[in-house]
Length: 382
Image (cartoon, rainbow, N blue to C red; front, side, top):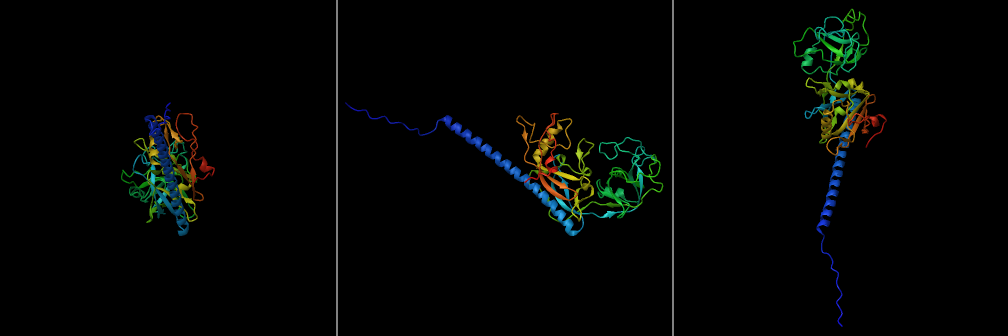
């Protein structure tokens, strides 16, 4: 009887089509996750690097002010792309000269009848004089009228801008006030008197009847000195890494920097956004009045995407800071890493903090409710 040869088991030499497709799908998924993680890490490194550069640049200006024993600061330059609400470059600046030509007279708010000259009588309230959305008392002393001061020509040449400071009277006994140049119209020939608006009322309410625009029988203090804009120092400027910006719309900045509404319905910011440090290290000028400045550092693409998102919402918060994900597209739009560079104006110190992305608004607007919380409680970031 013949024995059968034992059957051999056939070993497979390859994969089925389904197995290959599954393997390729898994590899593609892992690759996508890896690319996303690498891109996110690169974005985060770029944002952290930009925040660190800003912090170091501010510290360098502060060190120079202390070493040179004179004010030195940093000027932020508006980008001329997009909606002009972002900053990606800055330079060191030195304090400008002072101007004290001519004489002044202190007046109450009087622009109703013959803007900006008025009719000699205080305008009746209520009126929002300083543009903060609240009604002010026109009986307070808001106006500095200049005689032979050359302010019209200075504004025309760009030397007299909103946010500068005027000291009344001139010298160490005087008090500094921020100014607005809205009452000087350089599209018309200059008159014998040009007027500046103070950022807040003059300390003395005057001695004449409140209906009289001239606050003092004698005209009040007649000497002054104006701080002229700072000049750029011949040192290397700072350019932030690609796609990283300071988003002014998401920052908390001095009111003298803007934003202000434009005739086209948009907003604009000052050309002179200076953070000046004193020889003792603190912040000077209108920036000092802010107390704390939060500069929001993030992606330019994120900033413009969020701006487009807010534009479609009638009543959006201001300043507006996005949460981690905003309602754009089917799955939402994730916001890249971001940081706050927080400047404490009393000491001049600058720290890097995380943004608090929590959104508790119930009105359907994607916005962080208290984005500066971590900075204000002292939670620093790496």
